[in-house]
Length: 445
Image (cartoon, rainbow, N blue to C red; front, side, top):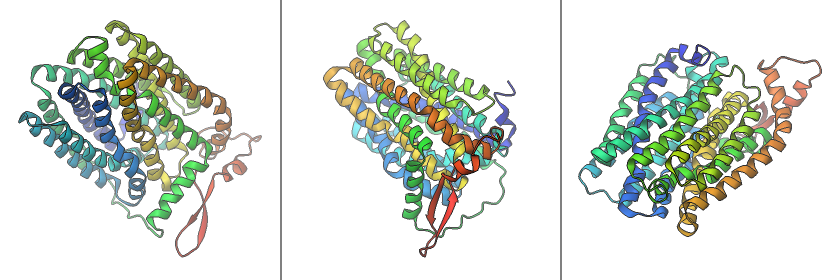
C-alpha cells in the first residue's frame, strides 16, 4: 500500500489530492445532471453531442496558447483563479435550474464558459504536479494517483448524481458541485511554497507556441502518444456522451440506470489506475497502452451489442479500465521525457488530445447516432480504436528506441556500454529563437 500511495508523503500533493477528490465528485455529479437535463428537455441525441461539444471545444482552440502562459505564469495562482471561476459557473447553473427557467441555450453558453476556464486549468494542473512532488521518482505515482482520484470520483459522483436527480432534481446537483470547489480552493491556499520565480521571457508568445508545436510534431514518441490519445477521444469516448440514450432507449431505464452505467465504467477506470500506481517503474508502459487499447476496443464492440443492464454493467469496467490506463500511461511517459521548460506547452497539447478532441467526437457521434443509432455509432468507433491499437503496437519498438536514451540519461534505466545514449539523445534537440534573431540549441527531451 505504501508503494501505491508514496506520492502522498509530499504535503502539498497530499493537500491537493484531498481537496481535488472532493471537488471532482461534484464535477461528475454535474456532468451526469447536465446530460440528463438536456436529454429530458429535448430527447435529442444530437443536442447531447452539441452540449458536450460546446463544453470542450474552447480547450481545443485555447489550450495551446494557455500552455505558453502556463510556462510563463505562476501555476498555483492560475489554479486558484480557475477553481473560483468554475465554482461561480456551477452556481449559475444551479440558480437557473432551481428557478425552473433554464434552457438548453443557457446550458450551452455556460458549458462554453467552463470550457474556456478548463483551457487554462487543465495544463496548469497537469504541470503543477511536478511542483507538488519534490522527489521526481514519485512523479509517475502522483500521475497515477491523479487518475485514480478522477476515477474514484467517477464511481461516487454518478451514483450520488443519479440519486439527487431522481429525488430533488438537477439544480441541487449543480449546487453541490459549486460547494465542492471550496475544498480544492482551501487546499491550494494552505500549500507551503517557495516564492514563485517569474519566468524570464525573451521571445514572443507565437514563437514559444511554434517551439512547442515543433517539439510535439517532430519527436516521434510524443507525436504518436498524442495521436493515439486523440483517436480514443474522438472515436472511443463518445460512448459516454451517448450513455443517456443507451440507459433510456436501449436498456429502458432512467436516472438510476444511467448512474449504474457510469459507476461501472468508473470502477474499471479506478482499477486501471490503481494498477498503474502500484508499478515501480515507467518502463513497459508502451505495452500497457497496447493492451489497454485492445481491451477498450473489444469491450466497446461487445457493449454496442448488449441489450441487458447486467451485461452492460459487466463490460463497462473493462472499457473504463482501458480508456484510463492508456491515457494515464501516455501522460506518465510524456511527463518523464519532456523538458521542464516545455512542460506547460506539452501538457497543453496533451490536454487538447485527451479533452479537446472529445467535443469533435461528441458532435460527430450525436450526428451519426441520429442516422444509424447509438449502438452502431459506438461499434464503428470501437473498430477505429482497434485499428489504432494495431498501428501503435507496430510502432512501439521504434518509439521505445527513441525514449530509451532519454531514460538512460535521466537515470530511469541503468546505463549500458552498448547504448549510444548521448548520440541518440542529441537527436531530440530543437532550435529556439530567443529574440533578436539569435538562435540557441536546447535539449527538449
